[in-house]
Image (cartoon, rainbow, N blue to C red; front, side):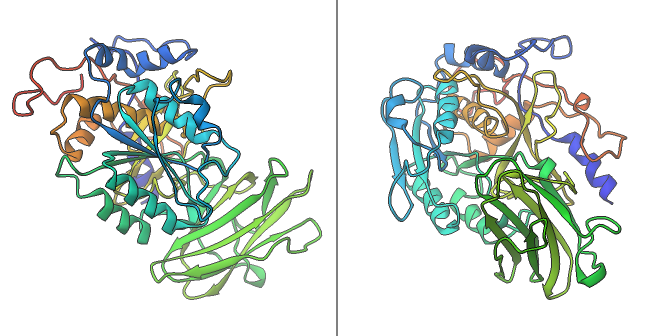
Amino acid sequence: MRKVQTAVIAKTLTFAMLAVLGNLASAAAPAGIRSQQESLEVLGAPSWQAAGYQGQGIRIAVLDTGFRGYRSHLGQCLPRKLECRSFRRDGNLEARNSEHGILCGEILHTIAPNADLLFANWEDDQPKQFLEAVAWARSRGARIISCSLIMPSWSDGEGGGDIERRLQRLLGKGGSSGDALFFASAGNTALRHWRGPFRAGPGGWHEWRAGRSENTLGPWTTEPISVELYCRGTATYDLRIEDAGGRIVAPGVNGTDGLRAWSIVKFEPKSGSNYRVKVRLASGDPGEFHLVALGASLSETVASGSVCCPADAQSVIAVGAMAVSGETFPYSSHTPTLTHTKPELMAIVPFASSWRSRPFSGTSAAAPQAAGAAALYWSRFPMKSASDVKEALYQAALRLPAATSSAETPKSSQVVLPSLGSPPQGSTDDTKASTSLR
């Protein structure tokens, strides 16, 4: 069954990104992305912008935790005015020393310069604050939400849990123009994620593979690391991080809400040190679980199933990262399951920045591209429902037959990259206008 599921990902809809206005099959990919203009051209946005469809009338919420210094970018890479709200207990939108959210906002403003942007942040370990931010964005008229952060242990890793249920209510069912679309980065965790059934070995410790009960954790820096285990059901697990001498480096926190379970260990690593990750059943009947390392590598990994919350939710459109050559980046997370395939869309990265020499990359730069394209389309057809807009994006992507290979990572050669294309001409009256993106 897993081979069948893996093959399904070859059918993932890939949004973006050859500047093809005619014959898709005869188009050649550009050599590389060196400027914002090239990013817009491979997206197909200039023709829409020139025709006057620039996101006007659309409000887009950027949910992030990195807005330090955003005021200095107003009227430049960001709109002159923003509506902002912090849901942190200290009310500080610029609390974290990061510009991540500004970069996401820059992509949106570059693609849809007349769209209104909203910025909101929350604290890392506060899902209630995150949901409050979503509710606020909706109350302020946001029809599109873009989030390029991951919170792995907030769901069961399969798109289930309380977060998903509440997002469905906040976003709406999609049948109305007042409902919203939520685009989220698929995540960059494919190479530092493990998924599979619990297999008890000597001492009750889980075996990551036959005879291997330790998963080596390699910190990237001395910045704090978070190792998170999450799963469906009520079985709980003891997650242990040991140093080279077998000493536990930090206590773990585990729990269950009746639908899912989690165990999290956070600590600050020592320079030049590696650690060992061990898992043991604490209570309940064991089953399949996910484990991901944030800020570090793992020696034992499984890429399949690596899409994290909120992108794993069925009500959220996950966006993966692809090179201009057509290859999916190895780090880009993907999740084929029996009920849905993630990511639904792909975007070409990196995306050039106007204010720093290093372009914005990863799936973080992918999600706002899809959100920006949705804003262009919605500004052309303001009465279309959220489902209509989503379907238009999906129809702009070219499906190919599933791969015959059972390899875990899908081959990028299976993907043909379509264009946003020229905007349809004629009335904006939805009863007369075409829904085609090509």
